[in-house]
View (cartoon, rainbow, N blue to C red):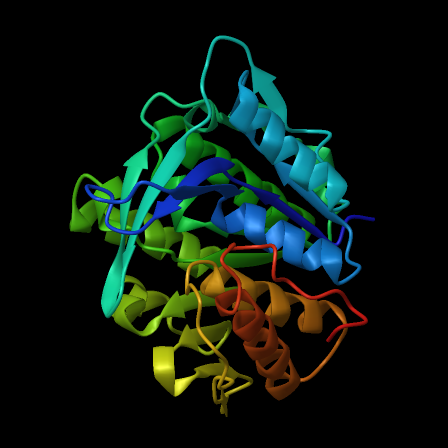
Length: 290
């Protein structure tokens, strides 16, 4: 049985200093669901990934990584005549990382509801979706909805990470409507402190609400109790991927039947591992390294 089934867009990512002056850059592959799938696989969980990549070297690299990490990519497709989307990250000292999106018309944005395997969703222990994939267009949003509905009909636990990226949405109002809908359907709800107002109606006692509070750590409200964890003091190389890593750690501990406090602890461990690496996913620990 698959532990976690997830769907999203694999992306190439080019990271550099100030792009207009920098002569060197680093190439990698990423994506929020991509990072989560790799992190869970390294912890020994059976994870399946649904997505589309272009018929190009970036797509081949993304699939090579996922296969190499033991992620099930049987449902991931290479779309002929398309390209894999890309991010450009501009990193500077004492400033937030700037991200430019090059994903319009990408293979990943062609994900459609007909690509979602209802039977495989129904046989999983958990389905994980994010607001980023839901923001990629009408078809990707319907694919996310199809996965969520299939999980709900089969009694499968639903995990949702808000992951609000303003640049991907036509308006805040539309984002609130869609993100709120998915949040209300979830059992585990992951969000940042600054995303609370976007899904406020979903912040009800029947679901676990896990909040990333930045430098203050993270908290969860579960069974009408609140639990907190402080972030680990580690050398920070790059904060990209930290949120996905935290979610992976929390989900891993939930699958292992651990308490909310222990789930937070494992999430904090994986988040710390992520920020000490130049890559979103390469610093993720194995089960033995936890």
